[in-house]
Image (tube, rainbow, N blue to C red; front, side, top):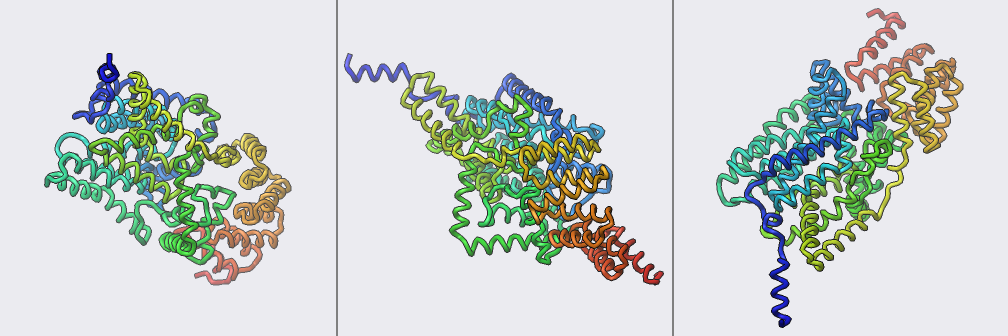
Length: 615
């Protein structure tokens, strides 16, 4: 047999392409009920198992930081009337959703975690459907299975955080826009769902270009397609505009769903920073957060402008350093490390054996990198999916690189990873060694690149132990809280927040000498620890050292000019010393910075009476 005939025979025996179902976009994204139930069931079981294993973890049972803010807002919604914070720390979408679940459960978190786990399972099925449309059912199913066991999303789905809900809304909106059926109906439905996602987190708006491409991809020149795009925008505005108008009226200035935009822009884009959520409680957070107030800028809108203007000025002054910062953030975006933003994922992995073995970004990214290359040579190009990935990669780089900030990018990457997994498996199965070797090499290079950096602060659990101690302290378990504060100090003797926590506990126990020692230790570690100055002033007042207490209160006020407890305590201290002018100035300032705070008006009335002015 000639060499040419042998080559033709080998090609007949080993087809060089995958079966059409694996690589050609199907006319339907129907996964089949068996696949849906199996995939959704696995995703739900994994999430509930992780929640069960974390149920004894203090910080999982009683949340802190963002989760605590969500819960408090939801509880205020239930108590009525509807609260509109000035400024709103988060979008109101998740607090409203959380309030509805807390109302149905009687205030417990069990139903919340169950419903969120079910929504997370639905996200996996939607990912499979989206992947099936783009690259075939096999690739879509692979993407769905991958997301079902993706550790960071599993954790967020059972935590009191809004990103799992956000991911589900983004997927639903994208699936609606790219589906079969009437374009006008698809456009309006996708726009309404995207509007809900924007109310959860304003950065969801970055999905809009992908939705437009998805609506136009079938018939870009038809009038109905462009009409669908118009309805998409109208539905989006119909959902978001009333909320934006109401929040802006309450705040007295334009607020795009969520406040602190200028401060967050400063944290992520100041050339002096690293673009990561490195400013933490007791480690630079308070100093940065109160900088605008120390500069004499009051009001949420004015303070946002202060941080925006400062950041842009720094960028203009040091453009090359800023470009270096963006490059560093882009590199962090590709890393397997889950940088702590709210809490460290690794802390919870240490408390859950299942969560500890679930794959993370370090597995998804290498296969996604390979899949991106495969998709780039396909015709037609999956432009909408590329737009999703590019948009949220840019959003992450231009804001802050962290676990929750990166999460909206993951479904798109999972779809590309599903394509790579199916293609690699087919090449191996059909003994196309050259193709299999090339795909494996690209994946290995991506794996190595994703593991180039580690983030040691995310593996130091002193902050998590401190926050756990604060949770027990709020539950009046002082002995348990003290034990956790000491565990925090065992992890990091320089934890200012742990020393502050011990100081507070000693005050509650009446051990003023021990409290003073702990708080002075905190101030030696960080002279700008505002809370330590305030707590120390409380100790000094309790031990009848009012002069020293007033000095500490003024130091606290210099660091945080609008701090309510400090202003109130300083006003009381000055009043008790007979300094009526000083007390009046402080309480007048308190009434101005915290309108509606009744004790300030009552204190001013007492001062007027003390001056024999009964009116």
